[in-house]
Image 1 (cartoon, rainbow, N blue to C red):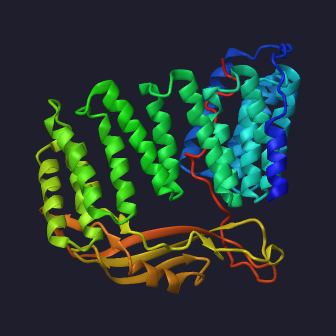
Image 2 (image 1 turned 90 degrees about the vertical axis):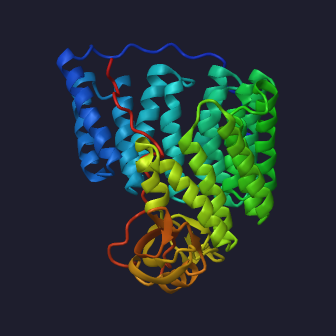
Length: 462
């Protein structure tokens, strides 16, 4: 771990060039017919990617790349986009070797044609790093991320706001390595960049404070989470007044931090403070009010205060029922929710800790378990059974035992919580195969969500 930290510091501190190189001339311009066709093909690729039809998307991406090579040549800058799309769809399917090949080819072309400090290098550098992270090779991921930072600094300066995506990936890297302080560092740098650009108490710093607060919430650093929301709340009050609706997000964030510490009364106080602001505002936001009432109901459900919870859920139901435009939200939030409130702490990794890495395949696999439950009106799980699991039997018994300790938001009919049978809950996790054990047939490779990285819609198009 110490060696990885030293490598990271050395790379991040390396000087960057201060000017971009002039781009070389590319081949002859493509025909207008091809540009139109390319836009249509790439739009189709984007649709396949969003629908997670990755195998079809890969075949289409290969076809687009071949056509682009015919139009522009094998070494043209216009190949950058098609190469990234092909590499990305290969990466999300676990084809890391080919993904790395196409990212590297992209990098080589962009560097030759556009220069070693071109911003066009950022995307393939991020893709390369993501691939190494998916392979479990954190050390290899450091170099492309450090290079991406140097490119950003060369173009926009040390305190550039554009370095956010790179810093986010570095945070994920250090989090995976178990070094939370290093992971935090990259989020703090982003906050400092905003403060340096706008001033520490400027309203434009608030989104950066929300971002770091959400990071602290995700990583269960509750005290830091609350301090970040408090800082945002102070800035908003100073700029807009104590009754500004923009305070609601900051107040909810503080309430959730108290809830995590099992401080029910403080959590409810902040939820109600936010609700009071919304109710006093001339423009009544019905949905936002209902969400806060549900937050209060959830708080009471967690602490087994079912009668009080029922009152808040009923009030939210009535609000949403009075507006035809809010009926879909009512169904999502109250009629058919499958939202755990008291965490069952189902494992996110199996085994939870690998003490002897030589006994395991270092590439994680994607696992899942589907549970069918009966939810009582007070949010308790009275019955649960596994209906599907991959790999079969790995965490089935543990999942059933833990899910029965959870609390869920009850489902409602006609404004009242009811007993709900056949409720489906899916839990995803990653697992590591023992090297001497045979892998269960049909086990999928880890698949990233389509939202993690969007494909380029019109690569090479004008």
